[in-house]
Image 1 (spheres, rainbow, N blue to C red):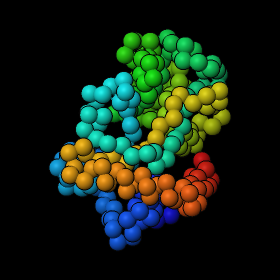
Image 2: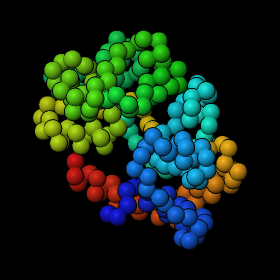
Image 3: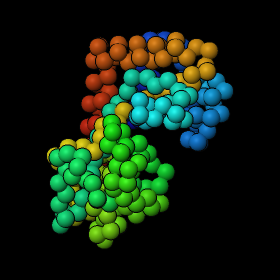
Length: 227
């Protein structure tokens, strides 16, 4: 495929709302530069894909304070990956209190505190943050952590690449969280509201005419065939 899933959704939504000549997607291979200075100085109008922190609970979070978020372009499950020899019950948040989770350094952690969960903020769990995803799974199989917390695609791909299918399982009872991938617009952009309205309108249109579901079906079939 020529485009990633979210890129194709954004491209289709913008094409629907603004016309194919009304937008251009530019790849910037420097993630740290997206929010600042590129978006903060209106060098680019919109950026994606970004997770939205719990802005109700943490309005002073940098992203919450400075950016508008579109409707989610795509939502992904964040799952707990466990050692089959050490089953983990997860039917309610209280089941995780006292456990040790693993997620690589630099990955988001807001889902561990959102909606009043406050696992990290109140020291209810321990979070190990090694350098890589592979390090997390090594810690899991060594019995050093109770679970690895990753989105389903990153986690399942790692399990396959590391040859751990016979050793590692997913907690099936519920996801840890559901995280949306959004387009963001800096609040200082002179056309911020119009840009946000354009992408949301286009997204709604492609959901209504079936294009969105076609994109999801094609990409998910490809992704799942590789896991």
